[in-house]
Image: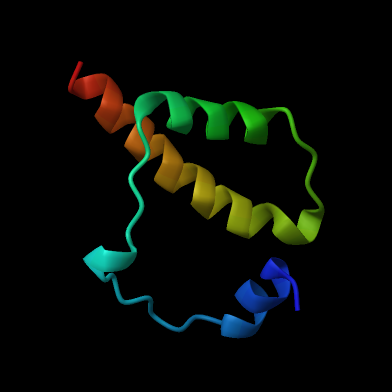
Length: 68
């Protein structure tokens, strides 16, 4: 089962944040993710998941720029 299958099968179940499972990304890593997404092609069925991911990463990017 691939990652997309796991996401689609999960439905709209709430995600419980546990600090032991959170990852931290520095500004360079955040920029890399956004640039990689920008240079990639996605299927129409992935657009909603991609949109939500970009929002989260973009908020992290804005945060890193605000704490210069």
